[in-house]
Image (cartoon, rainbow, N blue to C red; front, side, top):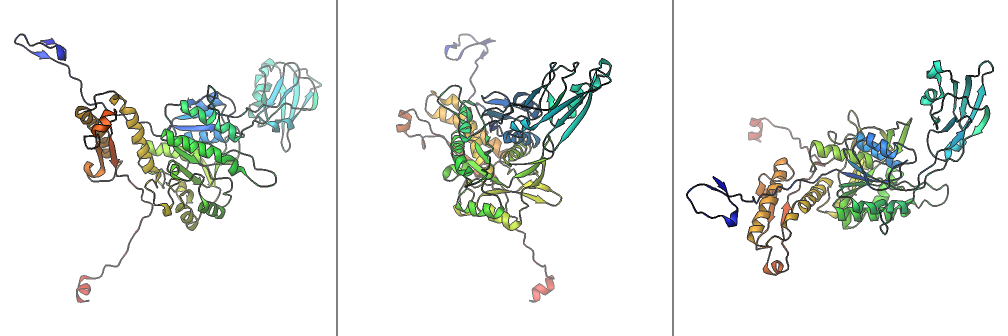
Length: 510
């Protein structure tokens, strides 16, 4: 027995010849479906797109939660609700901590960064009976913390570093705890500075390397969801123009999603301060209009979450929703609407900004706004799955988020999985191979329940033959593959019809 190469094989003697033939099957692997890009300010970290795969990963690279970063809370909610992979693009100018030098290398800094730390004061009182004891008092506007501290080597549990582990106001700024600081009265912390974040920071710069902000996502191999928390301070007086200021970011983000086959998840606009105003504003148009609205979705209202830094905090819902989508993709598939009592549960959400009525939900739903609801027993859930082309009046084929995301998933998978076609001879053998490979991929999705239809023939088609590849296209090096599918539509409206069953004898006599 001998191995011979195809074209050079010579049959010269009786026996067995082995020839290795290249299989026409080139399996197409489905693209990832819930890689979520986040753009916004963080406490620390790189400004280039950085992949994080857990909350611990985000904490180590970007400093964790920070009240001045809505992005940090969006990422926190994303992982809490089932997210597995995020790409973080840090933008804006970092804040500075307020600090104080107490002498003898004892230094403190505010627990949280920002200008509010400049309001902190510290008083140090030496114990008159021992040169190892002192009292430390930290005061803020409405809070006071007191500590009895020692530098006695035998009582390390009362050293300054251990004492301040429970402080809500300050933390050590140096690892020296065996010295006694100078006495002081109401000594102020200084040099605290708020970070800055503007729409231009979010837009970024594409003319220099490395790219920044949204522009930096052009360098990322793949992302499927995009969240950019709308973080602008409300003006103290005058007209609130935050939505107008933020509009260029939304426009740029949805254009990017259109190019990259991704979905933009939007927090409610700033002006939607009540359900009634939300209905009125949505009737005038959603944050994303036109055909590119099929790659965007808006959610309402904001959510009240448990804040690990203390208390509760009102934040936009987009980060939470991104986590719900990722969780649903894992459990059910990209074709399942990430909503409902089974799949739409909102973890970490204590309450919603508004408890919407059925009528308010109905008014917003028919305008393409995805509502979050609170139901007895089930708690807080996502209760909508429409794109910004989801208004009933539009009758758009991409009305529903899962239908649109299935299309994007197929596009991305085939875009990557058919690159081998380039420069192959453009004739029936190639077309047959394309039909085989793309058909196998589509059939796999069909068997997983991604399409409507009782049979594969009803559910999808793959066409690549002389009918859609005329000689004129062949001469120009063009090969065309037509792929169609029957998308699943979520059961938004369950219609239950009830009638009385009359006695058969009565029915016959009537």
